[in-house]
Length: 116
Image 1 (cartoon, helix red, strand yellow):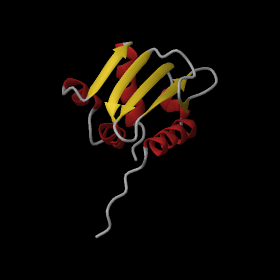
Image 2 (cartoon, one colour):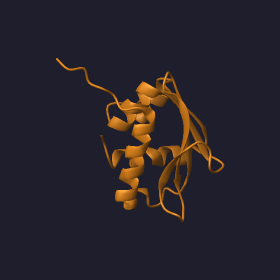
Image 3 (cartoon, one colour):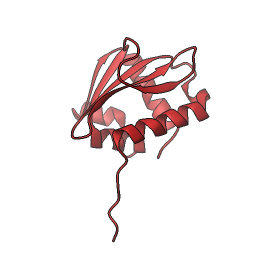
Image 4 (spheres, helix red, strand yellow):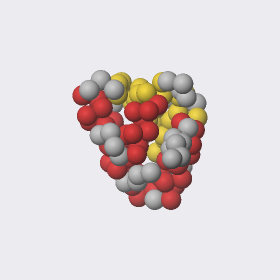
């Protein structure tokens, strides 16, 4: 039986970038700078930026973050994949949020608009 290969953090953000560019309506009303600090073996810092230039993801810090989310790579993949509810992750201590909580709540709607 073949082992399921999980996408890298870079690949997950590339998929998010493609999805939000394909259907930018999913980001309407959710303008802001979401920063993700991914921990674990495949760690990194990424941003999802929704502004007048259109929605996009970038590796590194392009703008000042309005909300910062810190999460383990595996939990992040599960959250994006739809098997880990962001609210449950936060309540269970798997997801740490700093900054604009209202913006963080809007993120769940964006993530729910696509699943991989």
